Length: 113
Length: 113
Image (cartoon, rainbow over all chains, first blue to last red; front, side, top):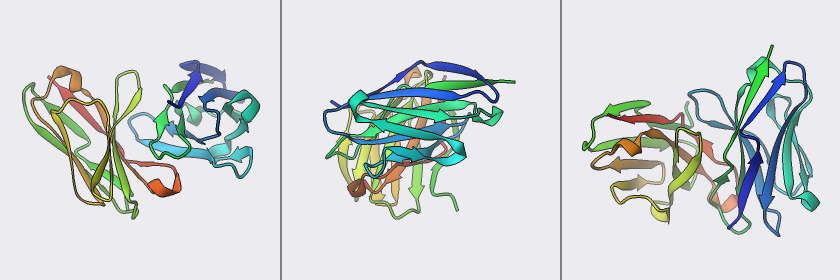
């Protein structure tokens, strides 16, 4: 079964530093890939999605992710962290031919002043 | 207008009780889901309905019964609540046939005491 693996359950960065959240998927055929963000006591909100149109995907709040087939990765980055970026981030996949969204375990991002 | 709305937002109840969570979406989506998020933030799909028909039924105790009166509503009824049912339950919806992202409600925090 297809799945996603998020490396690091917690990531801590200083305000203004680069944010890098890692996600790898398991599939021989590129699936649909997503990054969601969950702020405390809220539901999930879509940050960005990859649907094979372009390998570099730009999302909301300055985030972007690059799809690398050779590495089966879809890492999330932001050049400069802001305090308001502190949240839980989920990588997710819809397997090719399927429709059920499968989530990674999540990465909690801490931003230090 | 809230796209996916769940009620109630908080639910505290005693073991053995029966409770329901309601969900409605006004996005015109054809597919709705229930997810359970445990204390470690792990998201697991429970059920999915497409046009009022059950299409995903993961390994969930049969004390949990979803009901979809129409494609805009998906309710979750839980019988004989147990301590382990304490979690945040999220309703979501999507256009399943278009492999698009899921839109989430704000969640229902269920606490069984």
